[in-house]
Length: 116
Image 1 (spheres, helix red, strand yellow):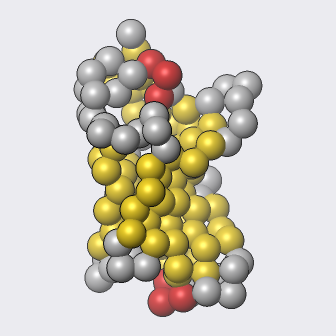
Image 2 (tube, rainbow, N blue to C red; image 1 turned 30 degrees about the horizontal axis):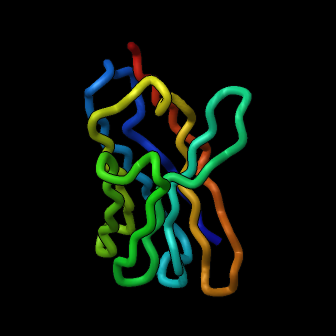
């Protein structure tokens, strides 16, 4: 089992930056992939960025060129650097892990609000 805690959310103006972090504890050695999702009010949860294994990354089109996902294996954390934020980035951001046994775990989420 893996326990996840996100941090770093907050209120920022359009064009600003935030850095989200996700701290993992528990069976972290079996983590195959970390993924950031987000869910805006009234919308479905959507993938933002993922990092697999030794560093293969994948981004939603909306995140490409603005967001960067990174993993610190020594600290068992994954971060999402978000630059040039837009009002449409406003959402609750969730950290997710998939383990080698395909079990998946979610963090409680952190709110990101971008004011226009």
